[in-house]
Image: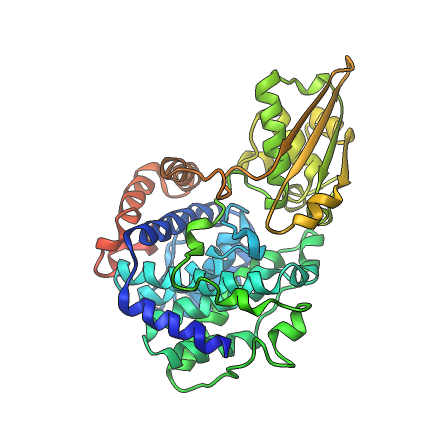
Length: 448
């Protein structure tokens, strides 16, 4: 059974540890997760979550970084997972159409602090969560993404694998944690289609399910071990003809955590190739938005379905609006946190350009999704000049990865305004050497 093979890998990985190269990839993921987390503390659903769980805060050993409090592991995983997805700066595993960091690292951190695990063990757990969940995600795509948000569904496996690996090195415990989490996999695409807070909660849900399933499995709660491939299981219910061989292909030898996409823009990842194409043309030709007659965007179907909101009226909708993020990028040469401030979103020249942006599905690019995220831009200027650029991947994808310095710069940009530059710099230094930490409590994350 697939889950047993996955759990045997997890147990073996826990015993043998990580190579320096894989350990470094896990550190990159951890630093980037914190970079996404801190700005999320400043926006919804964070205030509402804190109010809803006020009676559960201030107890337990698991921190809520940037929020100056603690909680029991499952609650901390739920809140941190949701918060880290809120600002749309979290990582992506392209083949699975999945944000692995939010559910996996939120679960791993909560359990590692609770058990006072070492930084080395934390990195191992993160890696195990990434390797198992990204493979399950890739096996059920692209059909799974038609109705389901992978970060909520497959994220349960990431959270369960990471949490269980910290709680026990026994393969049977990890197997039952994974099996139980499968029954609670959920997260619907409709959450993307309105200005609601549900989408961010999907990531927290995956982390919460993972932690509770892992603690339960360690105490004897059993799950259905063929729940992935069974006739009424995860694959049958949530996908069309899943390729289950992808769930174990390269397990333990090819590490997906080395090939995640690090976000370079603070919005939906389906907009990135288009933004990168526009920024390329802007830099090459010194574009001024007032010179533009129209912009035609040719990209894959899902990008238009998910990020095609024509006239966004809220920051959430703005992050899922190709016309808005492209117009902003044209004017300001970036799409970061400031892009979604209300005054910025209502600037007249940005709104004017938005009306001149037209989205078109490219069947060839649709056929290559999800393994390729590309866009072709054609910009017609008012003087009749036509500029074109094809962007075959996103900056931050494995084909054009961000360097460690760029990830550090992103961390400082996003964390500094929340916890102060001095605290951010100190935390960053410690995260890059986390494998030397004997006890995760030494980071004192609740004080940030």
